[in-house]
Structures are given as C-alpha cells and as structure tokens.
Length: 190
Image (cartoon, rainbow, N blue to C red; front, side):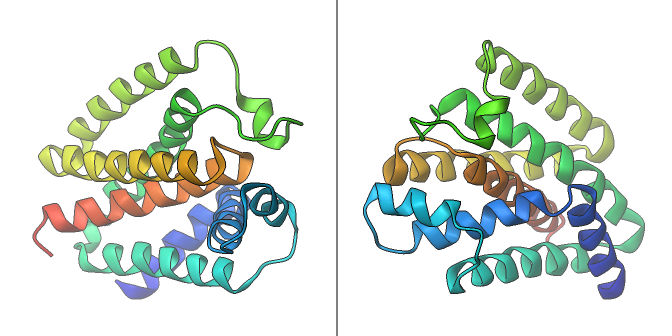
C-alpha cells in the first residue's frame, strides 16, 4: 500500500502541475514568518521556498500518504477520487467567504467573480451527494473533516492577511485533500 499511496499522491500533484502545493509552501512561508501583514504578502509573492514552506509540504504530503496507506487497497480509489474534487470545492468555499486580500490584484483574482456563494453552495451539495454515492457515511465524514479544516483555515487567513490570495487558494485545496484522506481513514477506524 505504501508505494501505491506515494504514486497516487504524486499523480494528484502532477495533475495540477503542483500549483496548489506551491501555494501551500508560499502560504506557510508567509504566515509563519511572524511579520506584519504587508511583509507576509511580499514573502508569499517571492518565488523562493523557505524552511516553513518545506515543512508544510512534507507534513501535508506525509499525511496524505500515511492516511491512504492505512486504507485497504481496493478502497483507496474512493478517497483518491474524492480528494481533488473536495480540494477544488474548498477553493470555491474560500472565495465565497473571504475577500481578495491584495488591493493590487494577483493570479487568484482571475477566479473571483459574481455569484461565488451560489457556486460554492451548488458544488458543496453536489460533492456531498457524490461522496455519499461513492463512500456512504465514510464519505460524508471525510467531507465534513475537509470542510472543518477549510473553515478553520479561512478564519486563520482572515486573521493573518484579511482575506485570500492565489497562494491561500492553493493551500486550502491541499489542506482539504489531506482532510478527506484523514477523515476517510478515521471513519474506517484506522
């Protein structure tokens, strides 16, 4: 199961070009720098990765891999199917509940638009129905775990930088994916 989990998590990262992992690393570098808001936003824009970014990447990837390793191999595909869907839904939720944090705009601003709340609600309902069909109660528990992580992270982003950026949108995607793996693992009593 371990090599399979590594391959699956690597495939998920490759599928998005590791864009969301880059956002996670940039967010960790900025948020854990203990600097004022404006300096945090500058650090997040820097293309270099720091120690906090590396630590965040390692921990999130290890969490995904370790959780997938504990699930029986014939059930792993369910979590892997639900992980990217939930991650993208978490991005919509963050865009619905947080304003864009940079006054000058940025890459994440391209995805903001009218009716963000309606889109987020629609996709959340579809995600919950899909997770029920694919995984039953375990799927609902996995989604709720990911949503809890998403809302906690949104609250933290609001507190630290006053909203969301493209980097935090990528970070929430990765955190929600890890939340699905963790929730699924916990729901199976692993």
